[in-house]
Image 1 (cartoon, rainbow, N blue to C red):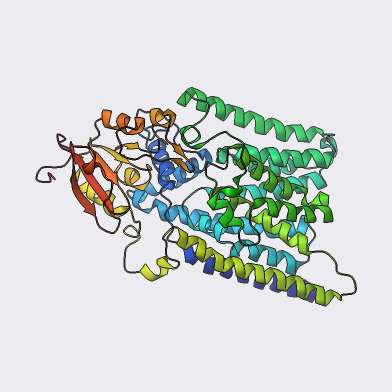
Image 2: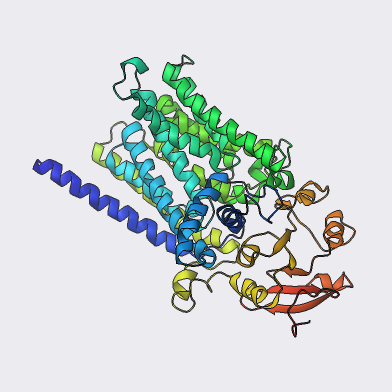
Length: 525
Protein backbone atom coordinates (compact mmCIF):
# COMPACT_ATOMS: atom_id res chain seq x y z
CA UNK A 1 0.00 0.00 0.00
CA UNK A 2 1.44 3.36 -1.02
CA UNK A 3 1.71 6.28 1.41
CA UNK A 4 -0.77 8.26 -0.68
CA UNK A 5 -3.33 5.43 -0.54
CA UNK A 6 -2.86 5.05 3.21
CA UNK A 7 -3.34 8.79 3.75
CA UNK A 8 -6.46 8.76 1.59
CA UNK A 9 -7.90 5.89 3.60
CA UNK A 10 -7.19 7.66 6.87
CA UNK A 11 -8.86 10.79 5.57
CA UNK A 12 -11.89 8.79 4.46
CA UNK A 13 -12.18 7.13 7.89
CA UNK A 14 -11.87 10.51 9.61
CA UNK A 15 -14.54 12.11 7.41
CA UNK A 16 -16.88 9.14 7.83
CA UNK A 17 -16.44 9.33 11.61
CA UNK A 18 -17.26 13.05 11.62
CA UNK A 19 -20.42 12.47 9.53
CA UNK A 20 -21.57 9.64 11.84
CA UNK A 21 -20.92 11.72 14.97
CA UNK A 22 -22.86 14.65 13.51
CA UNK A 23 -25.68 12.27 12.53
CA UNK A 24 -25.87 10.81 16.05
CA UNK A 25 -25.69 14.25 17.69
CA UNK A 26 -28.67 15.43 15.64
CA UNK A 27 -30.53 12.14 16.15
CA UNK A 28 -30.44 12.54 19.94
CA UNK A 29 -32.51 15.72 19.52
CA UNK A 30 -35.54 13.73 18.36
CA UNK A 31 -34.90 10.23 19.73
CA UNK A 32 -37.93 10.21 22.04
CA UNK A 33 -40.28 10.63 19.06
CA UNK A 34 -43.05 8.02 19.46
CA UNK A 35 -45.42 8.18 16.42
CA UNK A 36 -48.41 6.09 17.49
CA UNK A 37 -49.08 4.83 13.93
CA UNK A 38 -45.97 2.65 14.09
CA UNK A 39 -47.56 0.22 16.52
CA UNK A 40 -50.34 -0.58 14.06
CA UNK A 41 -47.69 -2.35 12.01
CA UNK A 42 -46.17 -3.83 15.19
CA UNK A 43 -49.54 -5.38 16.08
CA UNK A 44 -49.97 -6.87 12.60
CA UNK A 45 -46.41 -8.20 12.77
CA UNK A 46 -46.92 -9.74 16.22
CA UNK A 47 -50.14 -11.47 15.15
CA UNK A 48 -48.55 -12.70 11.92
CA UNK A 49 -45.55 -14.27 13.68
CA UNK A 50 -47.66 -15.52 16.61
CA UNK A 51 -49.74 -17.56 14.17
CA UNK A 52 -52.88 -15.39 14.27
CA UNK A 53 -52.60 -14.32 10.65
CA UNK A 54 -51.96 -10.92 9.09
CA UNK A 55 -54.69 -9.35 11.21
CA UNK A 56 -55.20 -6.42 13.56
CA UNK A 57 -58.02 -8.06 15.51
CA UNK A 58 -57.72 -11.84 15.20
CA UNK A 59 -60.27 -13.30 12.76
CA UNK A 60 -60.84 -9.86 11.12
CA UNK A 61 -59.08 -9.59 7.75
CA UNK A 62 -58.67 -5.85 7.33
CA UNK A 63 -55.57 -4.21 5.83
CA UNK A 64 -54.96 -1.35 8.24
CA UNK A 65 -51.24 -0.92 7.53
CA UNK A 66 -49.64 0.85 4.56
CA UNK A 67 -46.16 -0.66 4.80
CA UNK A 68 -46.14 -4.42 4.24
CA UNK A 69 -42.37 -4.82 3.91
CA UNK A 70 -41.72 -3.02 7.18
CA UNK A 71 -44.40 -5.10 8.94
CA UNK A 72 -42.53 -8.25 7.93
CA UNK A 73 -39.16 -6.78 8.91
CA UNK A 74 -40.20 -5.81 12.46
CA UNK A 75 -42.07 -9.12 12.71
CA UNK A 76 -38.83 -11.02 12.11
CA UNK A 77 -37.15 -9.11 14.94
CA UNK A 78 -40.22 -9.64 17.11
CA UNK A 79 -40.06 -13.40 16.56
CA UNK A 80 -36.34 -13.55 17.30
CA UNK A 81 -36.77 -11.60 20.54
CA UNK A 82 -39.58 -13.85 21.80
CA UNK A 83 -36.79 -16.25 22.80
CA UNK A 84 -35.99 -13.83 25.62
CA UNK A 85 -39.60 -13.15 26.70
CA UNK A 86 -42.36 -10.78 25.62
CA UNK A 87 -40.75 -8.25 23.27
CA UNK A 88 -43.80 -5.99 22.86
CA UNK A 89 -42.77 -3.28 25.36
CA UNK A 90 -39.34 -2.98 23.73
CA UNK A 91 -40.19 -3.11 20.02
CA UNK A 92 -40.32 0.68 19.76
CA UNK A 93 -36.62 0.81 20.65
CA UNK A 94 -35.80 -2.11 18.37
CA UNK A 95 -37.50 -0.21 15.53
CA UNK A 96 -35.57 2.94 16.39
CA UNK A 97 -32.27 1.04 16.22
CA UNK A 98 -33.31 -0.48 12.87
CA UNK A 99 -34.04 3.03 11.62
CA UNK A 100 -30.74 4.35 12.97
CA UNK A 101 -28.94 1.76 10.86
CA UNK A 102 -31.21 2.59 7.89
CA UNK A 103 -30.42 6.29 8.23
CA UNK A 104 -26.69 5.56 8.05
CA UNK A 105 -27.24 3.33 5.01
CA UNK A 106 -29.13 6.16 3.29
CA UNK A 107 -26.23 8.53 4.04
CA UNK A 108 -23.76 5.99 2.67
CA UNK A 109 -25.57 5.68 -0.65
CA UNK A 110 -26.06 9.44 -0.83
CA UNK A 111 -22.27 9.84 -0.53
CA UNK A 112 -21.56 7.05 -3.02
CA UNK A 113 -24.04 8.50 -5.53
CA UNK A 114 -22.39 11.90 -5.23
CA UNK A 115 -18.92 10.43 -5.72
CA UNK A 116 -19.47 7.64 -8.22
CA UNK A 117 -22.38 8.93 -10.31
CA UNK A 118 -22.30 12.72 -9.99
CA UNK A 119 -18.46 12.65 -9.92
CA UNK A 120 -18.28 15.21 -7.11
CA UNK A 121 -15.08 15.94 -5.29
CA UNK A 122 -14.88 14.31 -1.87
CA UNK A 123 -15.43 17.50 0.11
CA UNK A 124 -18.65 18.25 -1.81
CA UNK A 125 -19.94 14.69 -1.44
CA UNK A 126 -19.28 14.79 2.31
CA UNK A 127 -21.03 18.16 2.64
CA UNK A 128 -24.05 16.81 0.74
CA UNK A 129 -24.23 13.92 3.20
CA UNK A 130 -23.96 16.29 6.17
CA UNK A 131 -26.74 18.39 4.66
CA UNK A 132 -29.00 15.32 4.67
CA UNK A 133 -28.10 14.54 8.30
CA UNK A 134 -28.84 18.15 9.26
CA UNK A 135 -32.39 18.08 7.87
CA UNK A 136 -34.92 17.92 10.70
CA UNK A 137 -37.63 16.17 8.69
CA UNK A 138 -35.27 13.38 7.66
CA UNK A 139 -33.85 12.95 11.17
CA UNK A 140 -37.25 12.97 12.90
CA UNK A 141 -38.19 10.01 10.71
CA UNK A 142 -34.91 8.26 11.49
CA UNK A 143 -35.66 8.76 15.20
CA UNK A 144 -39.23 7.51 14.82
CA UNK A 145 -40.27 3.83 14.89
CA UNK A 146 -42.01 4.24 11.50
CA UNK A 147 -40.98 2.70 8.17
CA UNK A 148 -39.75 5.93 6.57
CA UNK A 149 -36.03 5.53 7.33
CA UNK A 150 -35.87 1.99 5.93
CA UNK A 151 -37.91 3.16 2.93
CA UNK A 152 -35.39 5.97 2.34
CA UNK A 153 -32.47 3.55 2.60
CA UNK A 154 -34.03 1.26 -0.01
CA UNK A 155 -34.80 4.21 -2.27
CA UNK A 156 -31.23 5.56 -2.18
CA UNK A 157 -29.78 2.06 -2.69
CA UNK A 158 -32.15 1.43 -5.62
CA UNK A 159 -31.19 4.74 -7.24
CA UNK A 160 -27.48 4.11 -6.80
CA UNK A 161 -27.40 0.55 -8.10
CA UNK A 162 -29.86 1.20 -10.93
CA UNK A 163 -27.81 4.18 -12.12
CA UNK A 164 -24.60 2.16 -11.95
CA UNK A 165 -26.31 -0.64 -13.83
CA UNK A 166 -27.43 1.76 -16.57
CA UNK A 167 -23.98 3.25 -17.00
CA UNK A 168 -21.99 -0.01 -16.82
CA UNK A 169 -24.25 -2.76 -18.17
CA UNK A 170 -23.41 -4.55 -21.39
CA UNK A 171 -25.58 -6.95 -23.41
CA UNK A 172 -26.32 -9.88 -21.16
CA UNK A 173 -24.54 -12.36 -23.44
CA UNK A 174 -21.26 -10.46 -22.99
CA UNK A 175 -21.57 -9.93 -19.23
CA UNK A 176 -19.23 -12.22 -17.25
CA UNK A 177 -21.39 -11.95 -14.08
CA UNK A 178 -24.94 -11.22 -15.26
CA UNK A 179 -26.66 -12.56 -12.13
CA UNK A 180 -24.56 -10.37 -9.83
CA UNK A 181 -24.97 -7.26 -11.98
CA UNK A 182 -28.73 -7.74 -12.22
CA UNK A 183 -29.23 -8.61 -8.53
CA UNK A 184 -27.82 -5.34 -7.21
CA UNK A 185 -30.49 -3.06 -8.73
CA UNK A 186 -33.28 -5.66 -8.73
CA UNK A 187 -33.29 -6.57 -5.02
CA UNK A 188 -33.74 -3.04 -3.59
CA UNK A 189 -36.28 -2.22 -6.32
CA UNK A 190 -38.38 -5.31 -5.54
CA UNK A 191 -38.22 -4.69 -1.78
CA UNK A 192 -39.04 -1.01 -2.32
CA UNK A 193 -42.15 -1.85 -4.34
CA UNK A 194 -43.52 -3.83 -1.38
CA UNK A 195 -42.37 -1.51 1.37
CA UNK A 196 -45.02 1.20 1.33
CA UNK A 197 -48.29 1.80 -0.49
CA UNK A 198 -46.95 4.82 -2.43
CA UNK A 199 -43.69 3.06 -3.40
CA UNK A 200 -44.83 2.03 -6.93
CA UNK A 201 -45.05 5.74 -7.79
CA UNK A 202 -41.34 6.24 -7.11
CA UNK A 203 -40.42 2.91 -8.69
CA UNK A 204 -42.17 4.20 -11.82
CA UNK A 205 -40.05 7.38 -11.61
CA UNK A 206 -36.89 5.26 -11.48
CA UNK A 207 -38.18 3.28 -14.45
CA UNK A 208 -38.66 6.49 -16.40
CA UNK A 209 -35.08 7.42 -15.60
CA UNK A 210 -33.93 4.08 -17.02
CA UNK A 211 -36.08 4.58 -20.13
CA UNK A 212 -34.70 8.07 -20.78
CA UNK A 213 -31.14 6.86 -20.26
CA UNK A 214 -31.70 4.06 -22.77
CA UNK A 215 -33.54 6.42 -25.16
CA UNK A 216 -36.35 3.86 -24.88
CA UNK A 217 -34.15 1.21 -26.50
CA UNK A 218 -34.17 -1.47 -23.82
CA UNK A 219 -31.71 -4.32 -23.49
CA UNK A 220 -32.52 -7.92 -22.65
CA UNK A 221 -31.39 -7.67 -19.04
CA UNK A 222 -33.68 -4.66 -18.54
CA UNK A 223 -36.63 -6.98 -19.04
CA UNK A 224 -35.24 -9.36 -16.41
CA UNK A 225 -35.49 -6.55 -13.84
CA UNK A 226 -38.93 -5.56 -15.11
CA UNK A 227 -40.16 -9.18 -14.99
CA UNK A 228 -38.96 -9.57 -11.39
CA UNK A 229 -40.70 -6.35 -10.34
CA UNK A 230 -43.98 -7.13 -12.09
CA UNK A 231 -44.06 -10.74 -10.90
CA UNK A 232 -43.43 -9.98 -7.24
CA UNK A 233 -45.74 -6.96 -7.10
CA UNK A 234 -48.51 -8.80 -8.98
CA UNK A 235 -48.22 -11.77 -6.63
CA UNK A 236 -48.47 -9.51 -3.57
CA UNK A 237 -51.41 -7.57 -5.04
CA UNK A 238 -53.23 -10.83 -5.78
CA UNK A 239 -52.56 -11.99 -2.22
CA UNK A 240 -53.91 -8.72 -0.82
CA UNK A 241 -57.08 -8.97 -2.86
CA UNK A 242 -57.70 -12.63 -1.94
CA UNK A 243 -56.77 -12.25 1.73
CA UNK A 244 -58.34 -8.86 2.50
CA UNK A 245 -61.01 -8.75 -0.20
CA UNK A 246 -60.22 -5.21 -1.41
CA UNK A 247 -57.92 -3.61 -3.96
CA UNK A 248 -57.11 -0.60 -1.76
CA UNK A 249 -56.34 -0.74 1.92
CA UNK A 250 -58.18 0.99 4.75
CA UNK A 251 -55.72 3.91 5.10
CA UNK A 252 -56.39 4.74 1.45
CA UNK A 253 -60.17 4.68 1.90
CA UNK A 254 -60.10 6.66 5.14
CA UNK A 255 -57.55 9.32 4.19
CA UNK A 256 -57.10 9.75 0.45
CA UNK A 257 -59.11 12.42 -1.30
CA UNK A 258 -58.65 12.05 -5.06
CA UNK A 259 -59.02 15.61 -6.29
CA UNK A 260 -56.20 17.36 -8.07
CA UNK A 261 -54.90 20.22 -5.96
CA UNK A 262 -51.49 21.63 -5.21
CA UNK A 263 -50.08 20.45 -1.87
CA UNK A 264 -48.25 23.74 -1.34
CA UNK A 265 -51.01 24.90 0.99
CA UNK A 266 -50.43 21.93 3.29
CA UNK A 267 -48.95 23.09 6.57
CA UNK A 268 -46.53 20.13 6.54
CA UNK A 269 -45.31 20.79 3.01
CA UNK A 270 -44.79 24.46 3.75
CA UNK A 271 -42.91 23.65 6.96
CA UNK A 272 -40.58 21.26 5.17
CA UNK A 273 -39.79 23.64 2.33
CA UNK A 274 -39.93 26.91 4.30
CA UNK A 275 -36.20 26.78 4.94
CA UNK A 276 -35.28 28.02 1.47
CA UNK A 277 -38.53 29.08 -0.14
CA UNK A 278 -42.26 29.29 0.22
CA UNK A 279 -43.28 25.95 -1.22
CA UNK A 280 -42.40 22.90 -3.27
CA UNK A 281 -42.96 24.69 -6.59
CA UNK A 282 -40.07 27.08 -5.94
CA UNK A 283 -37.85 24.13 -5.12
CA UNK A 284 -38.73 22.36 -8.34
CA UNK A 285 -37.88 25.48 -10.31
CA UNK A 286 -34.59 25.71 -8.43
CA UNK A 287 -33.80 22.09 -9.18
CA UNK A 288 -34.26 22.77 -12.89
CA UNK A 289 -30.94 24.61 -12.67
CA UNK A 290 -29.20 21.42 -11.58
CA UNK A 291 -30.96 19.57 -14.38
CA UNK A 292 -29.76 22.18 -16.88
CA UNK A 293 -26.19 21.86 -15.61
CA UNK A 294 -26.07 18.11 -16.29
CA UNK A 295 -29.39 16.56 -17.26
CA UNK A 296 -28.05 13.01 -17.53
CA UNK A 297 -26.62 12.89 -13.99
CA UNK A 298 -29.41 14.77 -12.24
CA UNK A 299 -32.38 13.36 -14.16
CA UNK A 300 -33.15 10.48 -11.75
CA UNK A 301 -33.09 12.60 -8.54
CA UNK A 302 -35.21 15.25 -10.27
CA UNK A 303 -37.73 12.65 -11.46
CA UNK A 304 -38.08 11.28 -7.92
CA UNK A 305 -38.75 14.70 -6.38
CA UNK A 306 -41.09 15.93 -9.11
CA UNK A 307 -43.00 12.62 -9.26
CA UNK A 308 -43.63 12.72 -5.51
CA UNK A 309 -44.80 16.32 -5.78
CA UNK A 310 -47.15 15.40 -8.63
CA UNK A 311 -48.48 12.46 -6.62
CA UNK A 312 -49.32 14.80 -3.74
CA UNK A 313 -51.18 17.01 -6.20
CA UNK A 314 -53.22 14.06 -7.47
CA UNK A 315 -54.35 13.08 -3.97
CA UNK A 316 -55.24 16.66 -3.18
CA UNK A 317 -52.36 17.25 -0.80
CA UNK A 318 -54.32 15.14 1.66
CA UNK A 319 -53.03 11.78 2.80
CA UNK A 320 -49.79 11.91 4.78
CA UNK A 321 -48.65 15.16 3.20
CA UNK A 322 -46.22 15.61 6.04
CA UNK A 323 -42.72 14.44 6.69
CA UNK A 324 -43.35 10.78 5.89
CA UNK A 325 -43.78 11.84 2.26
CA UNK A 326 -41.02 14.42 1.97
CA UNK A 327 -38.37 12.85 4.23
CA UNK A 328 -37.46 9.98 1.83
CA UNK A 329 -36.70 12.60 -0.82
CA UNK A 330 -34.28 14.54 1.39
CA UNK A 331 -31.12 12.84 0.01
CA UNK A 332 -32.18 13.65 -3.56
CA UNK A 333 -33.18 17.20 -2.68
CA UNK A 334 -29.74 17.68 -1.13
CA UNK A 335 -28.03 16.22 -4.21
CA UNK A 336 -29.90 18.71 -6.39
CA UNK A 337 -29.07 21.60 -4.05
CA UNK A 338 -25.40 20.66 -4.15
CA UNK A 339 -25.69 20.45 -7.93
CA UNK A 340 -27.15 23.95 -8.14
CA UNK A 341 -24.11 25.48 -6.42
CA UNK A 342 -21.63 23.30 -8.28
CA UNK A 343 -21.34 25.77 -11.14
CA UNK A 344 -17.82 26.86 -12.06
CA UNK A 345 -17.26 30.55 -11.50
CA UNK A 346 -15.16 32.32 -14.09
CA UNK A 347 -12.10 34.25 -12.89
CA UNK A 348 -12.24 32.60 -9.46
CA UNK A 349 -9.50 30.25 -8.30
CA UNK A 350 -10.29 26.61 -7.52
CA UNK A 351 -9.48 27.16 -3.87
CA UNK A 352 -11.84 30.11 -3.61
CA UNK A 353 -14.60 28.19 -5.40
CA UNK A 354 -14.28 25.34 -2.91
CA UNK A 355 -14.38 27.78 -0.03
CA UNK A 356 -17.54 29.49 -1.36
CA UNK A 357 -19.35 26.22 -2.02
CA UNK A 358 -18.36 24.87 1.39
CA UNK A 359 -19.59 28.04 3.08
CA UNK A 360 -22.97 27.88 1.29
CA UNK A 361 -23.60 24.24 2.21
CA UNK A 362 -22.35 24.65 5.79
CA UNK A 363 -24.67 27.64 6.29
CA UNK A 364 -27.58 25.69 4.84
CA UNK A 365 -26.76 22.69 7.06
CA UNK A 366 -26.66 24.97 10.12
CA UNK A 367 -29.97 26.50 9.10
CA UNK A 368 -31.62 23.08 8.73
CA UNK A 369 -30.00 21.87 11.95
CA UNK A 370 -31.64 24.69 13.91
CA UNK A 371 -34.92 24.52 11.96
CA UNK A 372 -35.32 20.88 12.95
CA UNK A 373 -35.88 21.89 16.55
CA UNK A 374 -38.55 24.38 15.53
CA UNK A 375 -40.30 21.68 13.48
CA UNK A 376 -40.15 19.29 16.42
CA UNK A 377 -41.62 21.81 18.84
CA UNK A 378 -44.64 22.35 16.59
CA UNK A 379 -45.94 18.99 17.78
CA UNK A 380 -45.64 20.05 21.44
CA UNK A 381 -42.46 17.99 21.75
CA UNK A 382 -39.27 18.97 23.52
CA UNK A 383 -35.88 18.52 21.82
CA UNK A 384 -33.36 16.40 23.74
CA UNK A 385 -36.09 14.90 25.96
CA UNK A 386 -34.49 11.48 25.61
CA UNK A 387 -31.26 12.77 27.15
CA UNK A 388 -33.05 14.74 29.87
CA UNK A 389 -35.11 11.71 30.91
CA UNK A 390 -32.39 9.10 30.46
CA UNK A 391 -32.05 7.13 33.68
CA UNK A 392 -35.16 8.68 35.22
CA UNK A 393 -37.48 6.18 33.54
CA UNK A 394 -37.03 2.70 32.19
CA UNK A 395 -37.19 2.22 28.43
CA UNK A 396 -40.68 0.79 28.81
CA UNK A 397 -41.93 3.73 30.90
CA UNK A 398 -40.41 6.19 28.44
CA UNK A 399 -43.17 5.24 25.96
CA UNK A 400 -45.86 7.82 26.71
CA UNK A 401 -48.61 5.26 26.03
CA UNK A 402 -47.24 2.70 28.46
CA UNK A 403 -49.07 4.07 31.54
CA UNK A 404 -52.45 3.74 29.81
CA UNK A 405 -51.64 0.26 28.49
CA UNK A 406 -50.49 -0.79 31.96
CA UNK A 407 -53.72 0.51 33.53
CA UNK A 408 -55.81 -1.46 31.02
CA UNK A 409 -53.72 -4.61 31.49
CA UNK A 410 -54.22 -4.39 35.25
CA UNK A 411 -57.89 -3.39 35.30
CA UNK A 412 -59.64 -4.61 32.14
CA UNK A 413 -60.82 -8.10 31.33
CA UNK A 414 -59.11 -9.79 28.43
CA UNK A 415 -62.34 -9.95 26.39
CA UNK A 416 -62.85 -6.18 26.67
CA UNK A 417 -63.50 -4.18 23.49
CA UNK A 418 -61.84 -0.76 23.52
CA UNK A 419 -62.12 2.32 21.29
CA UNK A 420 -59.07 4.49 20.59
CA UNK A 421 -58.32 7.30 18.13
CA UNK A 422 -55.48 5.65 16.20
CA UNK A 423 -54.92 1.99 16.89
CA UNK A 424 -51.26 2.23 17.86
CA UNK A 425 -49.36 1.49 21.04
CA UNK A 426 -52.28 1.10 23.47
CA UNK A 427 -53.91 -1.74 21.46
CA UNK A 428 -50.48 -3.20 20.67
CA UNK A 429 -49.35 -3.28 24.31
CA UNK A 430 -52.68 -4.64 25.60
CA UNK A 431 -53.75 -6.82 22.64
CA UNK A 432 -57.38 -6.06 23.46
CA UNK A 433 -59.99 -6.15 20.70
CA UNK A 434 -59.87 -2.60 19.31
CA UNK A 435 -61.97 -0.21 17.23
CA UNK A 436 -59.94 2.76 15.99
CA UNK A 437 -61.94 5.90 15.28
CA UNK A 438 -59.80 6.77 12.25
CA UNK A 439 -61.08 3.71 10.44
CA UNK A 440 -57.59 2.49 9.63
CA UNK A 441 -58.35 -0.94 11.08
CA UNK A 442 -62.13 -1.01 10.72
CA UNK A 443 -63.51 -1.57 7.22
CA UNK A 444 -66.93 0.01 7.74
CA UNK A 445 -65.53 3.14 9.39
CA UNK A 446 -63.06 3.55 6.55
CA UNK A 447 -65.93 3.75 4.07
CA UNK A 448 -68.31 5.95 6.07
CA UNK A 449 -68.94 9.30 4.38
CA UNK A 450 -68.39 12.66 6.00
CA UNK A 451 -65.40 11.78 8.13
CA UNK A 452 -62.43 12.84 6.00
CA UNK A 453 -60.85 16.15 6.85
CA UNK A 454 -57.72 17.89 5.60
CA UNK A 455 -55.58 15.28 7.38
CA UNK A 456 -57.84 12.23 7.29
CA UNK A 457 -60.53 11.01 9.61
CA UNK A 458 -61.54 13.37 12.40
CA UNK A 459 -64.22 11.81 14.58
CA UNK A 460 -65.98 13.74 17.34
CA UNK A 461 -68.30 12.12 19.85
CA UNK A 462 -71.34 13.81 18.34
CA UNK A 463 -73.99 11.12 17.75
CA UNK A 464 -75.33 13.05 14.76
CA UNK A 465 -72.25 11.81 12.90
CA UNK A 466 -72.55 8.39 11.24
CA UNK A 467 -69.15 7.29 12.53
CA UNK A 468 -70.04 7.97 16.16
CA UNK A 469 -73.42 6.25 15.75
CA UNK A 470 -71.72 3.22 14.24
CA UNK A 471 -69.21 2.96 17.08
CA UNK A 472 -71.95 3.34 19.69
CA UNK A 473 -73.99 0.60 17.99
CA UNK A 474 -71.12 -1.86 18.50
CA UNK A 475 -71.42 -1.34 22.29
CA UNK A 476 -67.70 -1.25 23.08
CA UNK A 477 -66.74 -1.55 26.74
CA UNK A 478 -64.11 1.17 27.12
CA UNK A 479 -63.31 4.43 25.36
CA UNK A 480 -59.74 5.75 25.59
CA UNK A 481 -59.77 9.49 24.86
CA UNK A 482 -56.72 11.74 24.58
CA UNK A 483 -54.02 12.74 24.98
CA UNK A 484 -55.26 16.12 26.11
CA UNK A 485 -57.53 17.80 28.66
CA UNK A 486 -60.97 16.45 29.53
CA UNK A 487 -63.24 18.49 27.29
CA UNK A 488 -65.96 17.54 24.83
CA UNK A 489 -65.63 13.95 26.02
CA UNK A 490 -68.18 11.13 25.89
CA UNK A 491 -69.55 11.67 29.42
CA UNK A 492 -70.95 15.02 28.31
CA UNK A 493 -72.71 13.53 25.27
CA UNK A 494 -73.35 9.83 25.80
CA UNK A 495 -75.58 9.26 28.83
CA UNK A 496 -74.65 5.61 29.29
CA UNK A 497 -70.89 6.22 29.65
CA UNK A 498 -69.01 7.22 32.78
CA UNK A 499 -65.55 8.56 33.46
CA UNK A 500 -63.34 5.95 35.13
CA UNK A 501 -59.77 7.27 35.31
CA UNK A 502 -57.06 9.48 33.87
CA UNK A 503 -53.82 7.58 33.44
CA UNK A 504 -50.58 9.24 34.58
CA UNK A 505 -48.01 10.78 32.24
CA UNK A 506 -50.26 10.49 29.23
CA UNK A 507 -53.37 12.57 29.84
CA UNK A 508 -55.39 9.64 28.52
CA UNK A 509 -58.95 9.46 29.86
CA UNK A 510 -60.80 6.18 30.38
CA UNK A 511 -64.58 5.94 29.98
CA UNK A 512 -66.54 2.77 30.71
CA UNK A 513 -70.01 1.82 29.50
CA UNK A 514 -72.37 1.74 32.49
CA UNK A 515 -73.75 -1.74 31.86
CA UNK A 516 -70.37 -3.26 31.02
CA UNK A 517 -68.42 -5.61 33.27
CA UNK A 518 -65.19 -4.85 31.42
CA UNK A 519 -63.33 -3.80 34.58
CA UNK A 520 -62.23 -6.36 37.11
CA UNK A 521 -64.16 -6.62 40.40
CA UNK A 522 -63.72 -3.71 42.75
CA UNK A 523 -62.75 -1.37 39.90
CA UNK A 524 -66.17 -0.02 38.91
CA UNK A 525 -66.09 3.67 38.01
